[in-house]
Image (cartoon, rainbow, N blue to C red; front, side):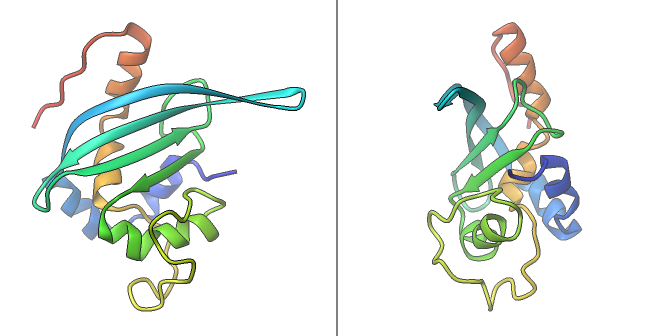
Length: 149
């Protein structure tokens, strides 16, 4: 089972947290998914975000494996930025209990870009963690959410 989002945030270096300040969240699309297997049923929230910053727009995806969306929930993450592809995707998939999947990266360790296999998030995913309470407000009240710059 993937790691709790708060753990992934804590493991992200301070310099990435500083760079995340320049990222802006544009919008999000939440969807509730129910997966039935045998006699059991699992459900999760899939939330897709659009972010923008100095490098252009990016798409980020989260899967929250609980009835609510939050930092204390086991989470699967993915981003289409190069930093995530070359530094984090393989590590999160292999070392962080499946907190991501290998979609864009090659199926081998990032020996050059992340040789210590450090578990962390990219700046886009880190910025999105700041607006998760607003997503919960939307899910509870079904009201429009505005993101301040």
